[in-house]
Length: 335
Image (cartoon, rainbow, N blue to C red):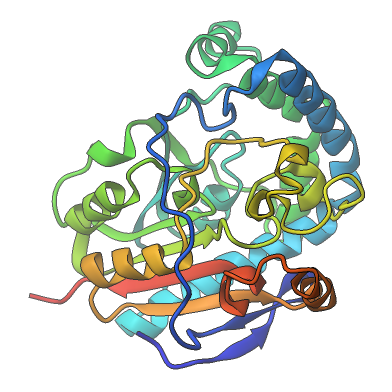
């Protein structure tokens, strides 16, 4: 594991290396995955989610420039980690993204100078391909279809891609190849990929260990696996879209970890609910000697102190509650 380090990052968060043992939390549930976007909580919750998605998409255009810079920071971090571990630049490489979603934004950025394949369990729908949208509806539900159509209808994708091209100083972004597949059965030969990466995907996987082991299989000796995952025990770990946007007025802080506030949470996705200790255990098993860092968010430290003074959240460590994202990088040993 890496030694503790910190560096400034987006939205007031800092990156930090591991700072000691984490207190155990609630074990992961055994609930089956239905769809990335639908935890299946009834008609009322679904309607609220549609409204929240609509508001979020309308607001997204106002934050595109900031979102583009955040993405560029993330991709540069991934490229920097690759270069540090391999001793070569991330150029002319074969790259696979696990969990690309509907936008392919990072895949298109990495495709500048590389051969990139974006993968996802969901169907990728674009343009006027009505059959693809109907397949999204059939396989992944109305919420995913509405989100996909919304990205196209409000022009969010087009505006984002134009802003990203300007920021990267290229005339237009190259296309990234998309292949629909199950990440537990990646359709690539052994030892064939230079870099496998994912951003905020593994917290949604029922069996993240199986996916990581598939990544190990397909990556070349001397190649890298980069994973940034959103920790369930962080304030926004429940993936309530209101909290992600910074609105705690209806939920309070860490509502999914507090019995008194759990009923206020509106989940927007399936979550495996793994704790920090469980992620550490997985990393040790699959990636011995991996580099591990964290994006830490201390903005709500005063709220945490207030809640603890009221007898809440005392079973969780500061690392569990204030570390937002866990970043794991590993190089496959050279033969």
